[in-house]
Length: 383
Image (cartoon, rainbow, N blue to C red):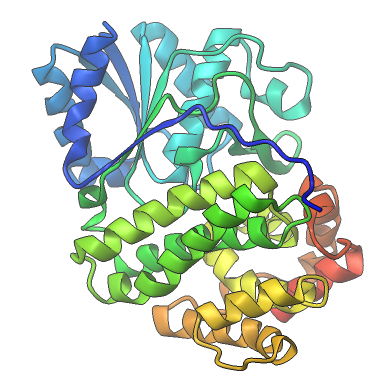
């Protein structure tokens, strides 16, 4: 018997090399005239913001930049952006960059419309009652899935938490998937974001809430990563491989929207908060141990993943047992093989990290119960 489920996505996806130039025309057709571009200094230095601003100007749309976005975005970033949006009088917001600017843009719109701090959303003191101005997401990395999800992941230094926030209007109106914008991305970042995309599809596929729709999205997302991540890490100008990872990221975002995540992300969130490490790198580091931890509960699916990445064992037990090892080998080949200990994760912090992970709602979706011992096992096996 099939379980009950539902599927919905309000986002229009526009894919193709060079299609970012269509944004101005779309805004003009909606009579939107003032665009706040939420981005970061790396995207500015790459010249991508100049391209977008020139395209907007060609369509008589005034724009302003907001660049105060950290790699792990914070409540303070959102609140400053909400003030900038209100003072500018923006009627549309463009999240341009990786997951950090896109996540920030979503809650900037909500905070400005509801006239409150993002801290109030993080603590549950306020809910998002009024949808903000419409948003366009233009990802320049392929991995976060923020471009296809309503959830934004933020850090709140007041509470010491990193978690997701969402509500009415937090999903993008349009997402533009233009692989040309990612051609200059460094190999390390390409690998880290690619593994981030893989992690979303993987956990959505293994999770308790998985369903036929989410499985279809997740399987195709994982297949695109398996077939193309090494190609694009080796040659960043490979547009076909860039396209594949761009689509895989969006599919991973859609899959996790439908069926959720699990222990990998529950453990990754507090590590990212405490050490300010790149989320994609953390996903790569924790993925082998996650596969090992969960495999007894999702044996056939774990075996499917293993075979996708090259394991030839026809027996599900044998293939599933090799899944974690084959991802470790992939990490080594693409430059993601650094263990958490080498990145500074200290034994003295393990208990705090486990305690924070145990507060995550994501554990409810994990195929094996997420216990303190389980979280610690995944963490220690990833050192």
